[in-house]
Structures are given as C-alpha cells and as structure tokens.
Image 1 (cartoon, rainbow, N blue to C red):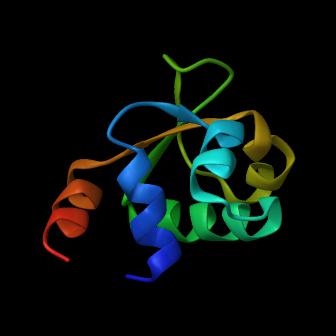
Image 2 (cartoon, rainbow, N blue to C red):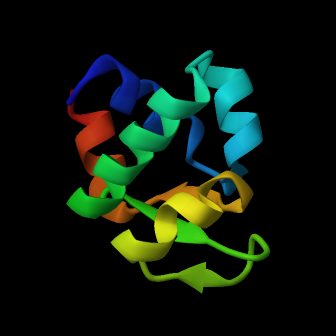
Length: 85
C-alpha cells in the first residue's frame, strides 16, 4: 500500500466527497483520481453517485467523467488493510 493509498483510506471511515478528500489529503486532483481508481480496482473502497446514499459499481468507461462528483467509503477489506499496515 502506497502512502497516498494509506492517506486516502485514513479519511474514508465515513462517506467523503472527492473535493473533501483532496483537501484533507493534499493530493492533486489528477493524483487523487488515479489513486482512487486503483483502490476501486482492488476493492478497497466503494463509490457513490450522484449522492452519498447511492452506491455505484466501478466502471472503467464512466469513472473519469464522474469521479469528481463521487463520494467514497472504505470497504471492509480496505479497512482491514489500512489497520494492519
């Protein structure tokens, strides 16, 4: 797990927006997007769109268009990995 992945998971114990994640982690939007994509592909986080209550299955083709409007939450596996680092 990279430092950026760890920092993101550290903020995702509760549903958090892309904008808030950027502010809390200090990651540039492009780096944040790239890292979130990797975490989603690994099943370590879940995404929500268009609101924080509607879970959205990760789809590579549409992710780039909506990522900055999404909300995120660590999955059980993500929390386990975060806590065992």
